[in-house]
Image (cartoon, rainbow, N blue to C red; front, side):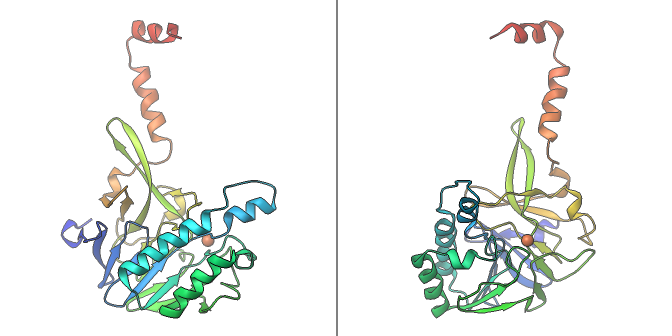
Length: 262
Ligand SMILES: [Fe+2]
């Protein structure tokens, strides 16, 4: 990571150059391209709660509302020219049809002010059916191409979602896990923006070979994005491994005392 190329943005995100384009990795998990007026968000998975309810698994049905509120806050703050939904905006092909009337109205209101672009994902191959805006497979933004699924191998200039990256780091004797951006300055993987989305550790082999240079993570903290070098990022389970190692190195008497304590 070249620290000189990454600086703190006023929103407490990270400002950088992505293929030479000014880019801000926002605390919300959105990508903001200020010189192009483009706000991009990936993997909202709207209506995931209602998709689970259809299958008899009950989740609180407020995921769409919460995610749209965060998106509206970003639009109000940044006044973009265009909002690009980078695929898997809906958790399934019927998701747009299950939107509550007021949630649909919120997207329609947004479309009245901003150009909405829906990139088709593997969960919503038809895009956002019945909603204003256009559905595309990918879209260019300056030197960057926004897609849903990262293509295998090196792809300088590509920004993608799909993988839901998250990172784990050691802090104060334990590990902390958070959603993150992953980039080498030429390519970028965005975190999932949705409220009900899991994450895939950036040390997973799914990320292997995607970057020409060693990437770094923009880990999303409570109120800022932290730039973390690749060497500091832990694989899943690393903290348990460390804890076991610590336990094993304790004196026998101490281990026995611990074992007798209820
Ligand atoms: Fe996906």
